[in-house]
Length: 459
Image 1 (cartoon, helix red, strand yellow):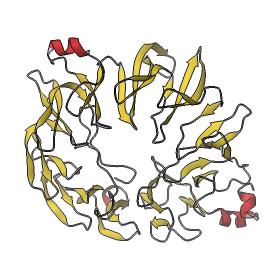
Image 2 (cartoon, helix red, strand yellow):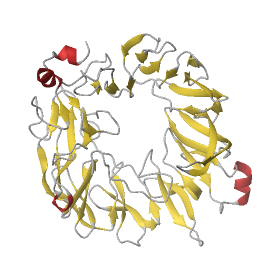
Image 3 (cartoon, helix red, strand yellow):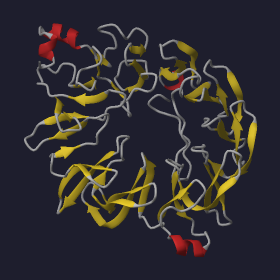
């Protein structure tokens, strides 16, 4: 159950249907966050707003199951496993009569009326706008959606339709992904015209929104475009695993990058690499005889920080990157390599906040050394979130972060944090000493130990 466990429809494609969980931009439906409490048959869930007010009352999951929200709609599943939609106030917009109903993207959603029926699309009011005629279909992105039919042998044939339901890219692919940056990764089906396979290749490649190839289909692996660059791979060998714990064969690849024109800007020579960020930089690692060094590359084929500048460097996020120097210093540096603050480990910054781990002695580390900090390395809350975990470690556009509670002894499943207001769910957890097992308050722990808060934090 979201947040922390988003509802996804997984089918036998190489993509997942985006379900979204927060409100979109201005003038969009108000944000809602699913929260649950209780266990087993007693579990009940509802939805709160960005102030922690319960907007959709708690109800048993066995009677009414809710997903995350997208475009003001949440999936409603009843006790008979039929699906419909509710809006931001909990009003049923579409009665649960569908075998499956997707969450909307771009004002439309796919649906299956019955278990063995074809897939089509409806609008936000439930009116059918594209008749069902595909075996499977996905959400729209950049004006295109993946649709699938099966050939006489049951093999998939994938292509793309536009928002009118017109096929704009022929169903001739064995694998395909949603468009990003106007490009989609595809792989031709074995049943595609032989002359097309001979012309383009039988591996992975990229097409534009009209289906025109922008590369040969000769990559052993390929990733979606992100910020104008896509990661491409070539297979360089295999490694056999056979020990007391596991056995098998691992394929080995080297990575490079192409631009939107399909040009290979960085040759496929990296052991590992990260996606390019909005600033146009990515971390990349070069290895020789198991001796590996990381650096930061740019979109133009140059090095911002050459391999060997640091013992280790992570990707930049919001102007900062976590590094380890050759002298053993660990922490975050800015784009000029200036040290900003020390830390033992840390994640990327998103909306000005990162989950960071600091050094503390065992005697003083009563609340754990990790916490949410700003770009100066200062904790943003007077508490540590010790008994909860969030996979994305970021605040959304409404300054909300939701984490799953894994601490024992609480009936709640999620803790919902606001960047400025602290805990907005569960109720009453924003006071010092509250949320035992999930939250830790250093000042109170310091008093218990007879130490000051500054001593507790190692200052």
